[in-house]
Image (tube, rainbow, N blue to C red; front, side):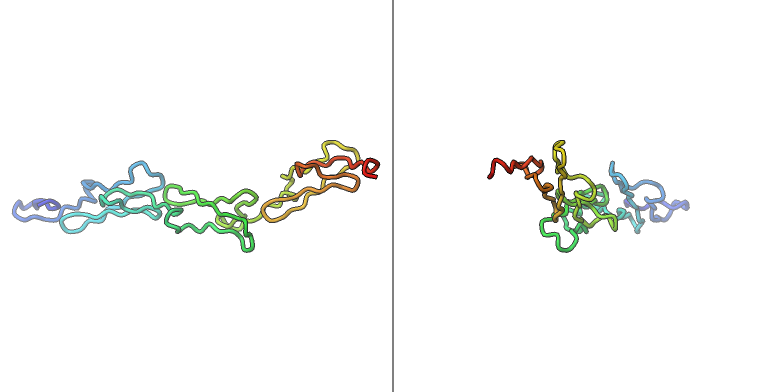
Length: 171
């Protein structure tokens, strides 16, 4: 019978340990970070997979579990960030988190989106375009920022550039 071999006495059949002999079909294929395991049972064997993977319907091949589709990822936004959208990225055997524009993964963990303070880190685009005496003012808000200008200057329609305010023309 399959799964058994003739004992050395040539009379009785004994269980063949397919796991030890390598006569099993447990595999991960080309999946990175995957380990297929083999467990001998009387008359056969069963396959298993490392964390983040599961057996396909054939019972031999490990396939990736897509945590983003199953909802088992832990990607979240810090409390109070209403416009924030956590983004799950499936990887072989695991997942990674990213965030919508204006947010970034915090340094406390690899799963929580926090607000980016564009003003503090200097990634804002508020500018005076070289106007003497002008200082652009960056105001951080949740998920974005706004620009203002020092007195005597007004923000342009682009919301980023300060222009000279002509007090004489406005009366």
